[in-house]
Length: 270
Image (cartoon, rainbow, N blue to C red; front, side, top):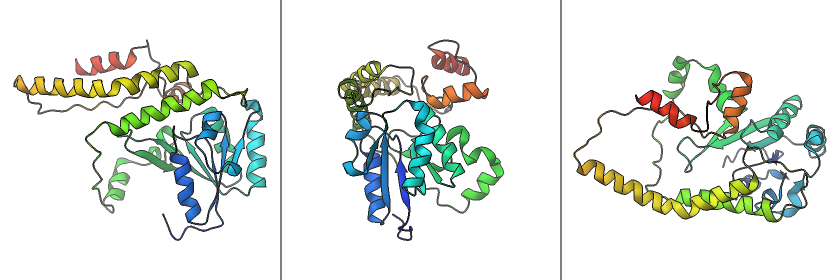
């Protein structure tokens, strides 16, 4: 934590990763004498936040959110906005209002080597990242002044299990304890029940999947195959909000079917 961080900073957290990450981050900021608030849009947001007196429930129709955010930012003297993903409807409108008020926007996103890392960028991520305005030569020049060695991710599946566990728990709260948020709507096409079942199934199957992958790896090398060339293809999950946002702006091709990722990889490989 930066010891030179000004203690008159007031951070407003919106929706974050499933689990206690945002709460833990806020505690670190409070140790630096900053003030932290959280706006929650469902019961799961509330369940993972402490203290309760720094939590603000938004239980009105989403059409009132931009006005509510503007009033809240002025009343609380917000200097910094912290959110997870910048393409959700509630986050897009908050960012738009924040920029009008000269509020610094901090965007977290799934790490590129997920789920061990979380990506942080100031102002925007993915298609809204400032990297999109930089040429490759500029990036190379910037990297020469930095240490390129990074910590290696762990070679075990515990972090994935934790990631899936919090996903299942998050959607459990929404399914069974969300009466105080009648206007809540998920940011994905999947229903809350489908999300809960998906995370629960992954939680109980991830160890089997790891064992299966290890067995396939063993069989592959025992058969005498040795990989000397690697091919990289950038891709994302089908229901990614970033993909859907880029589709609307015309910067991403529209999936032809539910299996478009498999079809795309098959096209690249063959």
